[in-house]
Length: 145
Image 1 (cartoon, one colour):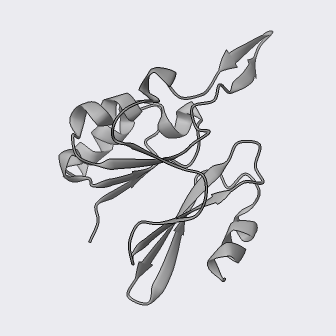
Image 2 (cartoon, rainbow, N blue to C red):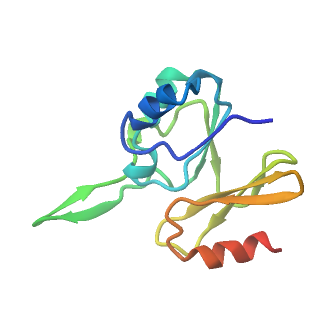
């Protein structure tokens, strides 16, 4: 039995949502960040400050700088690189089975690798994906194997 957060978002919204839903952030044991964009993992520092035990599963390329157009400029929309060496980050670059309930796999076809979480529960499989940059149907194909 796990208490999972899949992606954290860009700011403290996940904390406010958890509070409204009576979810104890300190009880979370597993975090999966789908990919290294700020809108999926920008709140990592906030999470690590509130939770002192969870393992954070993240792709080994997640802290690479990512730039997006912003008017006439390029702005970094990647993760806070000062967190890249945090002791609770568990880096992945391939499919990884956490246990009999949780499997993380990577879609390497996207411009930035995207991790998905497959949860096995009561004989069913549930897929969690971030943006599904290469298409949700392509990701679903993996779950059928």
